[in-house]
Image 1: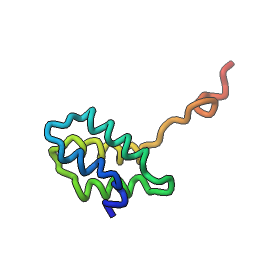
Image 2: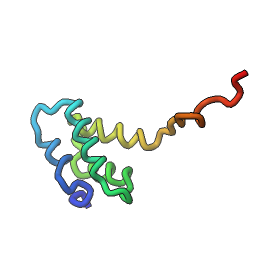
Image 3: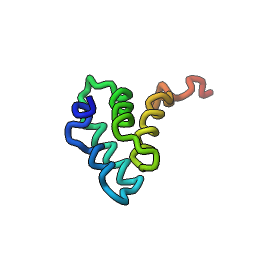
Amino acid sequence: MSQEMDPKGLIREAYRIEGITLEDCRTIFLDWALGLPLEADNGAAIRAMLERYGDPEHPMTQVLREGLSGLQSPRRRGGWRGRSRSRH
């Protein structure tokens, strides 16, 4: 399953890069996430990567966990729906 969730091997390679920074991992994560198929369950894909590669000391693990928690946190809607209707 991890092969199909990481077809380009971006996450795998990130874990192999010695001295990789948190910022580098965030960039790689974004590229990886944008490359997932539209029908993919992003949470399941992140969990699969954590299960396969999740070294607790590696910055990519932190980024993957942030991505997973970001999926669970509701965000304020932008635009007119996010604003209060009474403005008098």
